[in-house]
Image (cartoon, rainbow over all chains, first blue to last red; front, side, top):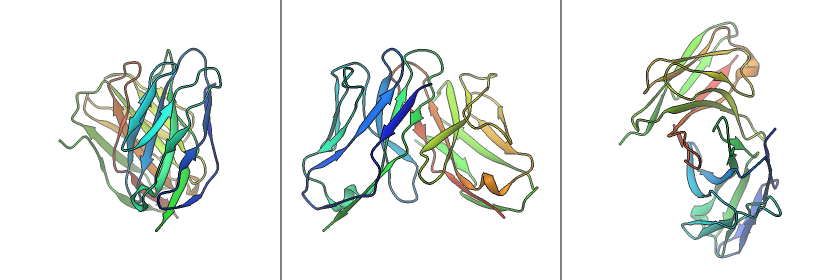
Length: 113
Length: 113
């Protein structure tokens, strides 16, 4: 079945550091890929998405590129802020059939001033 | 625009008690979902409803039942709560088309003692 693997956390960075959170997936066909963010005590919010190979999703300075050849969708940001501290989830929606999202285990990011 | 609304936000149950988690969305979405979130395991799908009148089991359906009452509402019922059902529960909805994202409620933190 479909699965998503993302790097273990927590990731601790200083403000203005470069961020990479790795995400790889296993799925048939061409799934849609998503990054969600969860702030403490809240639900999940969509951060960005990509629906076909080589698409780049971007939002709030975050970017991720859909790489079919490496089945990856790594999240990057050039300069993190304290306000980016949250849990980040990589997820996929299948190419066909049931459209429910399959999630990775989440990566907690802590940004220190 | 309220989006996805879940009630209650917090609940403590004794083992063997029953309860229903309520969820409503105002985005005219076809698909609705129930997930549970446990530490280190991401979100796992409990049940899914592709449209009004249909429901399907997800990854972890045992001990739960659902009702898609109408297009707006999708409830989750625990008939006889167990400590293993201590978790944070999220309801979500989406248009259900390929590439469309899911919108999440704020979550229900359930503790079974």
